[in-house]
Image (tube, rainbow, N blue to C red):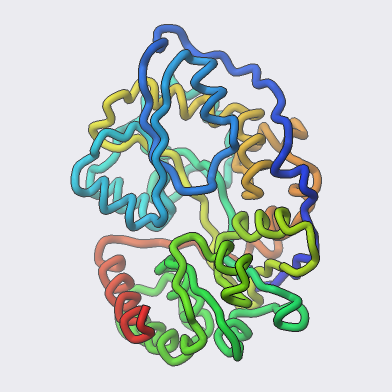
Amino acid sequence: MKNFIRLAVLLCVALFTYSSAQTSWTCPEGFEGQTLSVYNWTTYIAEDTIPNFEELCGVTVVYDTFPTDGDMLARIRQGNPGYDVTFPSPSTLPLMIEEGLLEQFDKANIPNMANLEPKFVGVYFDPENNYSVPYQWGTIGIGYNKTNIGGDITSWEELFSYDGPVSWIEDVRAMMGAALLMLGKDPNTTSEEDINAARDFLIENGQNVTYINQDDGQEVLARGEVDMTSEYSGDIFQVIDECACEDYGYVIPSEGTLYWFDSIVIPAGAPNKALAEVFIDYILDPQVGADISNYTAYGSPNKAAIDQGLIDPELLANPGIYPSEATLQNLFFSQQDADTEYLYNNAWEEVKIALGQ
């Protein structure tokens, strides 16, 4: 990720008004009349994914959303209020496994796990994928208004030094990681000294921050309240698409940035674990997975969907969504444990207090 890619590719309007193809996935028998409760991020699934599942299985889906990973984790930590499926980030998922907040899969019920890209399975926090499967992936970079700032940008340095309004995303590891990179430090450091140095850097270089966004930086950018925002890649591409103009861009900063893949998991105490496993298998169907990625403009971890040519060609060719191997070599993936979480979260809270956010 440290090698920036300037993204001047505008996505055609058809990307988000696509007609999804009919999936060949068949729902197992015996689930008619049951209910599945899903807890997901906002703007993070295709419009017809849930209705199609309800129709195929004859079930009802109760669908709730959360604005940040921390909100989801806090709610599950208090005791699962009845969710069957949720979607943690790679910084939260290890904690959920460590704290016993997840159910183990019965993999016999999820045969479509075989469709996944090998580089997204067997990761350090769940080496056997007993608790999680990848859902979508992307980067946290910079969305910006090219018209307002007078051109393209390439780096975190330009965000931090910009003489105008900017927004930061409410993602501890992304923003602390960016600061650590600017300081020449390991973005996954466990050193309290380095973490505090990153805190101080953000405080010193955050005077242009008018808003710390709860996964809605794209909306603040689109409304013209800021000229730059750190945000999830897919959210910025949605703004680019909806505008159908040349005002907006998205860049993977030259210093590097965090890449991530969110996962699908079953919270401990899920009321309907069996139907949750059926839903996960449905999500991992090549056509269903492709429809989601084509709609959200995030990367698909579904190798079968890519191999079968189901991903929109414009998206697949966009290096901001599917970066080159050279770029991937420079990305950092968040690694965290409970002790590290405490240090980073405390430092981030101190940043927000100092900036009046």
